[in-house]
Image 1 (spheres, rainbow, N blue to C red):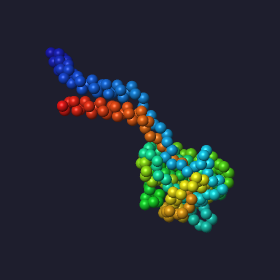
Image 2: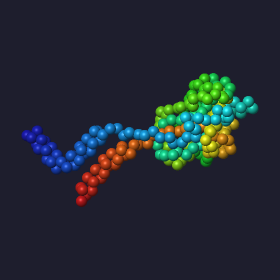
Image 3: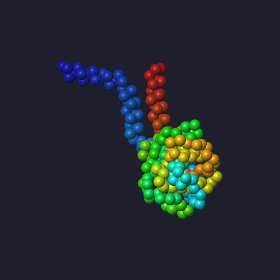
Image 4: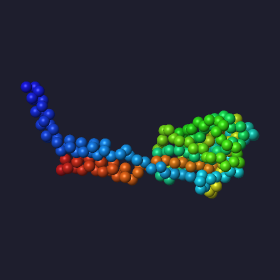
Length: 231
C-alpha cells in the first residue's frame, strides 16, 4: 500500500508542475546542446608598429643604471574593452648581464602610478637578445586571467634585482601615455616621469555576439515563464 501511495503522490506532483518541469528540461536541453560560450581575442592596447615593430635603438633601463640605483619602469594604458586578460607582449632587450630572472607585471592604477599587481610573470634570465638587435618581442600568457574594465587605466611594469641592465625598447608609434619610473626596484614610483613609453601590447577575450545571444535567449525563457506564473 505504501508503494502505491507514494507512486500516486509522485504522479500527482508531476502532473501539477508539468509545465514548469517541461520548461526547465527544455532550457537545460538547450544549454547542453549548445556549444560552450566562445570568446574572441581582441587587442586591448598596443603601441607597436606594423608586424610588432619598435624602436631598436633607444630604451628605458630596468635594473642597474651604474649610478647606484635599481631602476624599474612602468607604462600605462587604457583598456579598449571590458575583457578577460590574456597576454602581455613587451619589447625587451639585454643591455648588460641579464643572467638573473626578472618580473613583468600587470597592475591596477593607484593615483596615476602602478598599484596592486593583477598578475606577475617571472621570466628566466638569459631569455633576451642583445640591445640594438631586432629581437622578437617577449610574449607572456596569462594563467589567472583577471578581468579588465573598458576605459580603465592599468600599468605594465618591469623589475629586476638590480644586478643586470635590461632595455625596454621605446615604442615607434608616438604613444605618450604616462610612464612611471622607480629608483628602488618598484617600491615607490615617480609618475608621470616624462619618459617615452616602451613598446607593449595587451590582449584579452570577450564573448562572441552569438554566445551572448544564446545566453540572453535562455534568460528570457526563464523570465517569461515567471511572468506567466504570476499572471
